[in-house]
Amino acid sequence: MKNLSTICLTLVVVFGLLFSGGCETKAQTGAVLGTLLGVGVGALVGGSVGDVGAGALIGGAFGAGGGYRVGNEGDKKDAKEQTAYEINQLRQETNTLMINIRNSNGSITPVMIRRQGINYIGPKGELYYAIPTEEQLKPIYGF
Image (cartoon, rainbow, N blue to C red; front, side, top):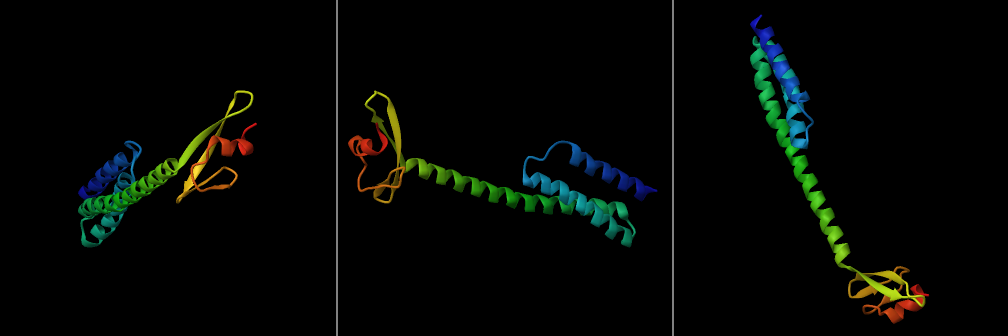
């Protein structure tokens, strides 16, 4: 009967962890799932050697640690990918400039020019060997 109560207590703790709130990181999710898996495997192994409760507790502890490590590596990978994405966005913004063209009616047409190596590319793919002037862009984008 003692083993049965230990198992019930373990399951209550595990499900309490599972449903106590949403997991915000992969490390947290990994710890919860690892705990569940560890409790199950530990209970099976413990049952074969005579102490289901101790097996479940030990398995849960190892499962939580292992699941946390696996999830934490996923979090690190996600952080690296996010950083790479942000750096790429910053590079694109840094290599882009806006030239405003004043039209004959007084309105302004913004023209986005992208730097590519030492040259500049207009919105329609035209190549400039230096930053294009308003006068160069006006025949194409102005009115």
